[in-house]
Structure formats: structure tokens, C-alpha cells
Length: 219
Length: 182
Image 1 (cartoon, chains in turn yellow, purple):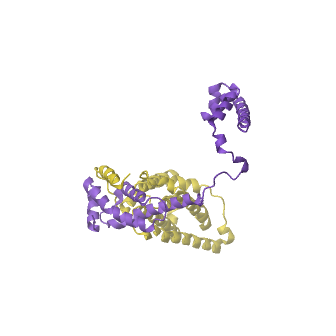
Image 2 (spheres, rainbow over the protein chains, first blue to last red):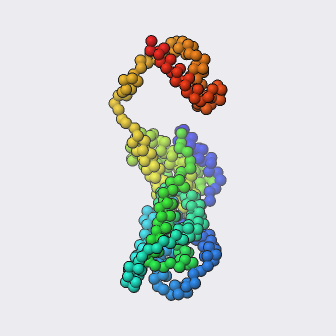
Image 3 (spheres, rainbow over the protein chains, first blue to last red):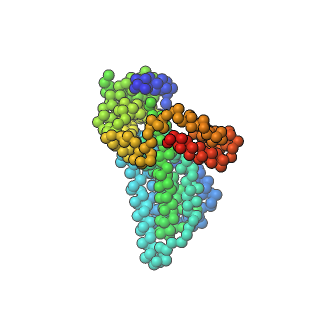
């Protein structure tokens, strides 16, 4: 097909206006607005942890939760920016700071636990509730994030979907700790952050299947 | 027709609002830009015009992502560069499975496979040999080789069992090989 003929076909196909994409921050707010009621519902069904009042007074717990929430928000923002052509590349690294703070606070927590309780403080026991818990809470945020990402350009599908998965999983972990009473640094690091990392990697692995150019190549 | 950044942005904005004439003008105007970007970096064998068309199709698919408050050319070039990178990857993948040779080999390396082509292509000898086959063997060859049926389909069509078809086919090939090598 000649390029001129293709231009005529595309122009003919553009007679109806397209709905311009809102800015990434507006889309992020929409994502949070849809995800929040689901998270509230799951937390209500699972019942808030009985010691939440005490936890809210602990700077370490607040810092860990703040870092998890910041990771979710910044990773979501980065995912939504990555699919818009022409936006700066540094935006894809928005979540790097919060992730480092999150890992740093948990690592510091492990050291504190070690100092307080010795090797017992950093011992690991099976905690299989984390994986299904994070998957369940992250289901709606994850699906909504994919729907939002599919409206963007599939420029870097692995990065976009990986960041989207990280945002949904980190948000789910934030919610999980509102009803799941497991705060030992090593346990949170391995079972909860491990699950978040696993889900993010799995999302990135299927990125190319979720986001792709839908048109056929010109013949 | 050369367009400047402000004109391109204005035309894209009009195109997003459903102005097909503005869109056609914009696409016409950006083709040289895309062609230039592609020509600078493309090292594959695919026609550069195919890539230009790929970029136009991609732009069309994601035209809603253009924000009129941001410059147009970086938006366009980001799409062009990603499509070009995709094409380079595709080309590299294909090239990996290909072997460059100066002259194609005339025949197979295996001595037994070097059948004289004129003898094999002798249609008259072949049809005589086919006619000399017993009916069940001839039917097996017709169904499995000439009509390219599967064993199951041939079994249904002939009423012979799959095992019987296999035996008939084996015997037929043996007879044909013997007849053709005379």
C-alpha cells in the first residue's frame, strides 16, 4: 500500500473526535478512587487488627506503612506516565526512592529485632496468608490499573505493567497490614515484600501480552 | 510541505477534535520527518516505507495520548523511535535464524538423497508404476500423498483401518521405489 493511500484511510477514520487522555495525576486519582472502596471492603470483612491503636503510635510501623503507600502511589504514577509518548524517562524511576525507604526501614527493623531478641527476632516461620491476602486485596487495583494502561501507548510494556503490578501489590500490602498482625521485620521483608516483588516480576513478564500495538502492519 | 512545531500541534489538536482534513495535512507533513528519523537508524532489509507506515498506524492508534499542552515533535519521535526499535528487534530475531551463503547448494549433502531429478520427474514412468500397484496400495498413495489426507481422514474415506493404510503405504512406496530405479 502506498503511504498516500494509508494517510487517506487514516484521515477518513478520524472523523469522530477522540476522548483526550486526562493527565497522569488525574488518572492516578481515579485509580485510587476505585481501589479505595474495595480495600475498605476487604479490610472490613477481615476485621481491623485489634492492636491498630497501638500501632498507629509506633513511628516504625507508620514509616513502613507510609513507604508502602508511597511506593504504590509513585509506581502507579510512573506506570501511567510510561505509556504517554514524549514524557521524560526519569518519571519511570519515581518509585525508586520510596522502594529504597521501604526496604531500608524494614532492614532497620530487622536489625532492631536482632538487638532486642537476638536470632529469634529475625527467625522465619511460614506465613502463607500473605500471598493470597495480597493477591485478593490487589485484585481490583490491579485490574483497574491494567484497564488504564491499555488506553496508553504500549511503548515499554514490560516496564509499564511491571510498575502497575508493583503499585497494586504495594497498595495491597499496605491494606494487608491493617488486618494481618505480622510486624517482625524479617517476616514482613520475606513474606510480604517478597510477595510484592514476585507479583511485580510476574506482571512484568506478561507485559508484552497485555500491552501491544493492535493494528496490523501495513501491507 | 514543511510544518513547524506550532502548526503540527494545532493540526493534531484539530485532528483529535475530528477534523479529518487537518489530520491528513498533518500526516502528509510529518512523513518526511519520520522518513528522516527512520533512514538515520534503520539497518534492516525491510523497506523504510513499511516502517514509516507502521509509525503512522501506531500514531493513529494512540492519538488520544497527545496532550495539546505538551510539544508535538517529542511525542511523535517517541512513537517513531519505539516502533523503529521494535523493527530492529524483529529483524535481529529473523537474522539470527538465517545463514548467509554465497551460492545455494545444488542438492542435499546426503548421498542417498541425490536422486536424479529427471528420473523422479518422469511422470509417465511414475503413472505406469502407480497403475501397476494393487488397488489398496494405490488408494493409500492417492489419499495420503496426492490428496494429503491425515491417516484418520484416509481411514474414514477408504474404510481401511489405520494400520492397514500404513502397511499398504509402506508396500506401495517399496514397489514404486523398485519400479523407478529400474
